[in-house]
Image (cartoon, rainbow, N blue to C red; front, side, top):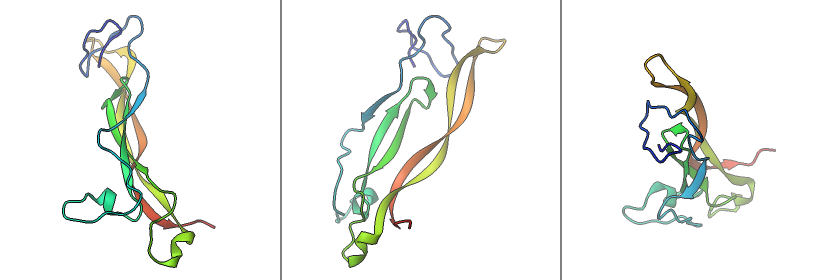
Length: 133
């Protein structure tokens, strides 16, 4: 993490003056192209072989530890099925609650930064599911 002065901060340090951190930025992970139809072949990752292919996006928040988190994003709204049931199904994100630490403006008696533990719901993949009625 970097302080507002350009000084590198490591987890556990606080910078209490001025603007401490930049805001949350999203960027796409290199090489994370969206494949619209399932692929096959040796070594093809599961996210590209799925009937609901997905790609990964990286979110960055300099107020959070870990600073970078990778989240799945579905490439299609509908499942890529060969049977006629594709109209009754949809691609949905599979999520998991991930523990993360956020910096606070507080420090303990030794000057060590106090963190706030939160749980963020992150998409870890996509699955084909029957559309809710």
